[in-house]
Image 1 (cartoon, rainbow, N blue to C red):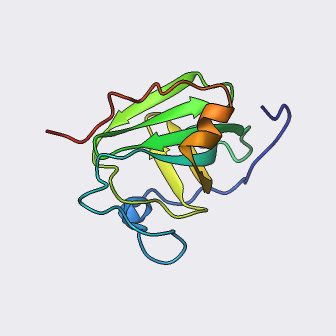
Image 2: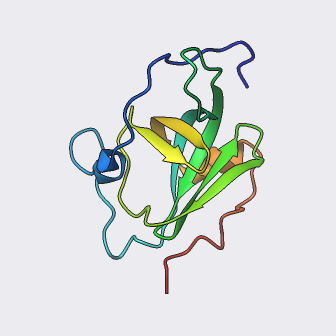
Image 3: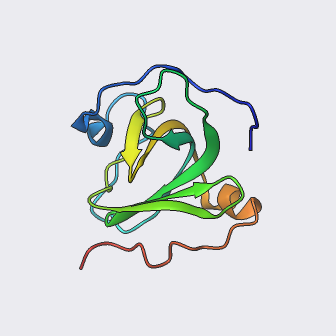
Length: 129
């Protein structure tokens, strides 16, 4: 993690734009065929707060059509959020997951996630039947 790292001190308003970001800035959208696939994002996250100064940590957001899991950089689960996460998120978007706000840094591969020592903890995150 980044001890002492302080991320952006701004707070973007909570809008549905974060989940509608399939256009510019994203590397393609989720197709019906790929709706059950997992997408991995490198993120900074912090508990939701109205404080001006926040301490941010590094993590990975894993999304599927059915839910999203926020994982810490040491691969432990931080929170889970059920819902429609099938659309791809754009870099620099601020996305709320459970009681946390996350800022998308970049898309990573499943291999990148496994290289961190993670197991595929999201095998149950398939598409909604």
